[in-house]
Image (tube, rainbow, N blue to C red):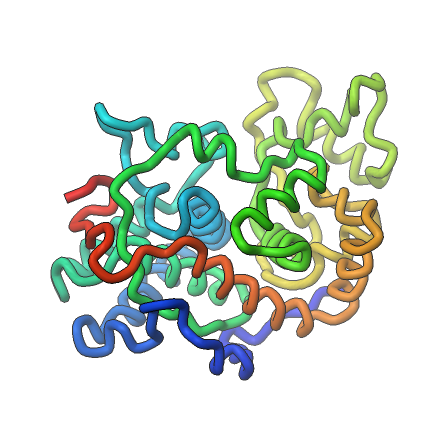
Length: 323
């Protein structure tokens, strides 16, 4: 049923994609040639110790790019001048992988000080995280600069929520230059990772104030989820895999789950209630390499949202604070 992707599946047509603005695939070849190896070794080491880190790094990159572009703003601690994105509802007590990015940054500062941006590190780490879990490879153009501020209010407003209707989620994607296909493709990242019970508990007991469970949820999955997430506040932070079939494998099982009403989050299963998105879900459920190709392409688009280049921003010495 599930299909594993070759860890270094090279999507040929992606190699010909033109870099965004001043971004370049060879940006650090002379100034920090060991960058890819340093990122890869750190991510793979972290993954061997904790397979959940793959989904965490991918989510961290997504949450960075959706708020003021891919500028490393999600990595910043709050200051007297701003309340950072880490404090926003979608991030508070849930973002992980900050220590991995800091470790990579520290290694690079010893090797090539004040050279590689935290935004580029995070973008590369997201790719290595996907590869570690068996997902596809894609080329990453580099040269991003780091932003100087981080806004909790913007994160609360801009990050998609599992409680939002599909049309609002699509609108948030399109406001970032992405389209409805990217919504479906990037949602496929939920083939790995976990969700806290509070993000889907209303589907289990009182869906839309009906006093009953969500009727689209498979009965056997419903029973399992009700046992793991009982209807008490104490269960809110318990974890449940987004994909119960191949939890740690980056594959197309997520889409097969949606077809069979096994989607965990309301926003995921909603893809089957829209004719256009449901058609794409069905295609990806049948053709794993189609999903691999399109996921790689959408990740390139995601990594190019609102990038800062040239003399804008800065190269932070520490990812959690501006210089």
